[in-house]
Length: 84
Image 1 (tube, rainbow, N blue to C red):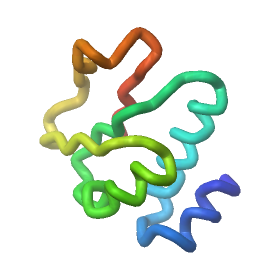
Image 2 (image 1 turned 30 degrees about the vertical axis):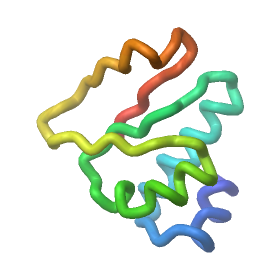
Image 3 (image 1 turned 90 degrees about the vertical axis):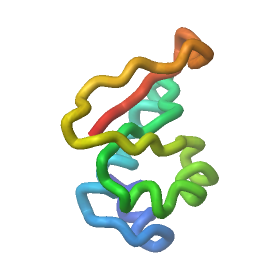
């Protein structure tokens, strides 16, 4: 939660979007590496460079009907996709 508050100064996102980013950070602190955020929300794509710098994640825009994505073959066994 504190990380979401910290991000409000840097990024112009809705509250729920900031919580998604805080969740990614919390998952990483548990040892799971999130490389890509799969979303239909174009607000994330608008700040992709900032997210790459601060969290090291890229944004993969999907259609709203898509709910599951298969990671690319080169993602490695300890890389995960997360979709909101």
